[in-house]
Amino acid sequence: MSAESKVRDHRLIEGKAVQARILAEVAEEVATASPPVGKLVSVCIGPTPEVAVYVRNQARAAAKVGIPFDQQVWPAEITQEECKKRIQALNDSKDVLGIILQRPVPAHINVRSLQSAIHPLKDVEGMNPASIGNIVYSDIALAPCTAAASVEMLRSTGLDLKGLEVVMIGHSEIVGKPAALMLTAEGATVTVCHHMTRSVAMHSRRADAVVVAVGKAHLIGPDMIKPGAAVIDIGINQITDEDGTVRIVGDVDTDAVKEVAGWITPVPGGVGPVTVAMLMRNSMVAYRRQKDAGWIS
Ligand SMILES: NC(=O)C1=CN([C@@H]2O[C@H](COP(=O)(O)OP(=O)(O)OC[C@H]3O[C@@H](n4cnc5c(N)ncnc54)[C@H](OP(=O)(O)O)[C@@H]3O)[C@@H](O)[C@H]2O)C=CC1
Ligand SMILES: Nc1nc(=O)c2c([nH]1)NC[C@@H]1CN(c3ccc(C(=O)N[C@@H](CCC(=O)O)C(=O)O)cc3)C=[N+]21
Image (cartoon, rainbow, N blue to C red):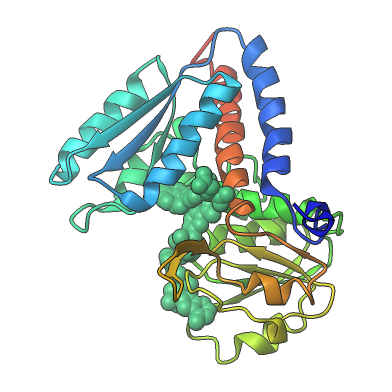
C-alpha cells in the first residue's frame, strides 16, 4: 500500500468513527440498565432486499451494545388488519423495548397507519405522526434515524448550526422533512428542494451545508457546491461500472465534490453506519421514557 493511500483524507467524515462513539455510550447505559432492556423488534413485510444490509447492521450493532434483537419477516401477503394485531401484541408485550417497521412495505399496506399503530413509547424510529410532531415542538430526542444521523454528522464538523445556511435536497417523510425540521430546531436556516424546485443548483451553491437524500447517483456535482461547504450524502444507489462491477454510491459525485467541499460523507462509510447507531441510541431513549411512564420498574 503506497504511503499516499495510508494518509487519511480528513475531508471525509468517517461514519464508523461517529458510530463507535455513539455505540460506546449506548453500551454503557445498557450494561447498567435495571431492569435489563427488552428486545428491539425489526419488522420486514415480505422479502425486501434493499433493507437486508440495514437489518444485518442493526443486528450487529444490537449485539455490540447488548440490546436483544428480534428480526421478524412477515409474509408479503399479510393483511393490514393482521399487521395491526401483531403490532398491538408487540406494544403490549413487556419483553419488547421497541419496534422498527422497515421500508418499503408491499403496496397494499398503508405504512402511515401501521406507524401510527406503534405506540409512541416503543416507536424507536420516531415515525409515528405523534413522534414526528414532537420535532415541530423542537423535541428531537427521538427522531427518524437517518435524519438524526445527518444532523450528527453535520455537528461532527464543528460548524455552529445556529444561523448555518443549509440546503436539504429531498423532502421525504422519513429523511428530508424530519432532517429539515431538526436542523431548523438547531437554529439553522434551511431551504428544502425537491423535484419541483426550478434550480437546485441556485440554492446549493450558496449553502454552507448541503444534505442530499434523493436516490440519484451523481446528482450533486462540484459545480453545485460552494468551496469549503459541508456535504452530507444520504443517497444509496446501486450502479454497474463498464467492466460490470456493481457498486453502491451516494447522490454525490464524491471524488469530484471532495476537491471543493470542506467536509463530505462517503457512501458507503458515512451516514449509513450512523443511522444504525442512532437506532440504538433511540432505543435507550424509549427505555428511559418507558421507565418515566412507569411501564417498566
Ligand atoms: N443512509 C440511510 O440511512 C438511508 C438512506 N436512504 C436513501 O436516501 C435516498 C432518499 O430516500 P428517501 O428519503 O426515502 O426519499 P424518497 O425515495 O422517498 O424520495 C426521493 C426524494 O427526492 C426528491 N427528488 C427526486 N428527484 C429530485 C431532484 N431531481 N431534485 C431534487 N429532489 C428530488 C423527491 O421529491 P418529490 O417527492 O417532489 O419527487 C423526494 O423527496 C435513497 O437513495 C435511499 O436509499 C433512505 C433512508 C435511509
Ligand atoms: N423504516 C426504515 N428506516 C430506514 O432508515 C431505512 C429503511 N426503513 N429501509 C431501508 C433504508 C436504507 N437504510 C440503510 C441504513 C444503513 C445502511 C448501512 O449500514 N450502510 C453501510 C453499508 C456498509 C455494509 O455493507 O455493511 C454504509 O453505508 O457504510 C444502509 C441502508 C435505512 N433505511
